[in-house]
Image (tube, rainbow, N blue to C red; front, side, top):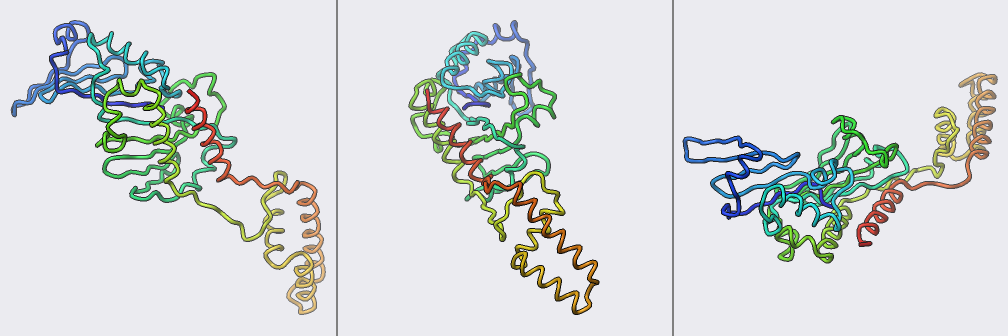
Length: 312
C-alpha cells in the first residue's frame, strides 16, 4: 500500500556525516544567505542534510524490490527500514512521516482507458483529466491520481515484471503531501508506527475512503440494447435508432408511408426494411441478454483489492 514516502527529523546528531560522505559522496551547497545542504542518493532514495534537518525521500518498494509495481505491504515495512538504516548507519524508524503515497493496482478485465469516463467529481478536489493516461484530483494538501500503470512503465522504459505482463493495471494513488498527522491521525507519526497491523489497516481504510469519495458516473442508455460483440457499428446503431423510433413494426410502417408519400422509391424503402430485419435477427442471435455494467465492474475489482490488502 506504500509507494513514495518522505521522512524528516530536526535531530541531525544521529548522522555520521563523515561516514556518509566517504561512503556515498556529497553534493554540497552553500548559499550566500547562510543556507547549506549536503545531498546524495542511495539507489532511488534521496537524502539531504541542511539547516532545517534531515530529509529522506523516495519510493520504498523500488528501493527494496527494484520496482514499484508491487507496493510495500505490511510484511515489507520492517525489511525496508532495516535495509535503509543499515545503508545510512542510523535507525530511521523514529523519523517523522511528512509525505506518503498510499497506493495499489487493481486488475481490470479490459483496457483501463475504458473505465476513465466513470470517474466524476470529487468534493474539495480539483479534477484534471489527461488525454492519454489518467486523472488527477488535487487540493492544497492531498491528491488522488488514477492512471494505467502498464502504460506508465512502457512510457518510462521500465521493464514490466513477468507476473504483471498482459494485465490491465489501474493504479489508484492517494498522496498526502502536507499535514500528514491531520489526515492519518496521531497514531501514525513515524515509520515505526506503520509496522503495527492496526495502523497499516488504517492506510487501507483511508485508500478505500478516498476512492469512494470520487463520484462514479452512471451511463444509462436511452435504449435498452447494449452492444454485443460481432455487430458492425452500422448494424448496431441502425437497430438502436429503430428502437428509439418506436420499434421495428413502427419503423417499417414509417418507411412504407414514406414510399407512398414519394419521399423515396419503393426499391430503396424495401431494401432498408430488409436490412433492418436482418440486423435485428443478427442482434437477437448474438445477444445472450447479458449486460456488463463497467462502473460496477470497476467498483467490484477495487473492493476485491481492498479485501486482499486487509487480509494480513
